[in-house]
Amino acid sequence: MLLSSSCVYGLRASLYLAANQDGEYISIREMSESLDISFHFLTKTLQQLTAAGLMESQKGPKGGVRLTKKGSKISLYEIVEAIDGNDLFTECALGLPGCGEEKPCPIHDQWADARDNIRAMLQSTNLVELAEKGKNLNLRITADGSFEWG
Image: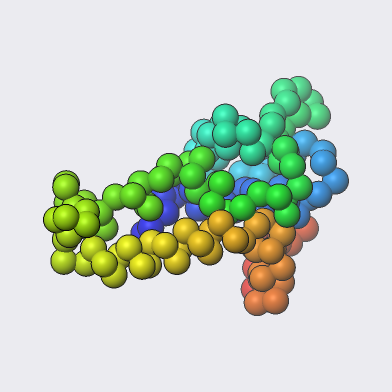
């Protein structure tokens, strides 16, 4: 898997928040139940996104998290970078130390092309576009926040 579980959950949670564009804080407990993600795991993931400035949190009865800017202004790349860092785009696919242009591994050139395409796609797709693509594929976020094909 190219992305960590934390990153996938961060993308799902960000998409969930982008679908709620009214700017209100959403309870992490509510999100964890709706997205079927462990509360503690989701909390740690959202802390990373908050530290990166993509989300803000508020404590208290009306607390939770929300996006710091509109979903159309947050690229998928920003979320991936905040959680998984840049290793996907800089490290050898086989994990070989020293792999590079001077000492390429057996799949170096193919991985470089694939990696560049993945980076370009993540940089050029924002949360609103992802939600729209989901709608076009008949993937919906239901009233309770879960995802379903319909």
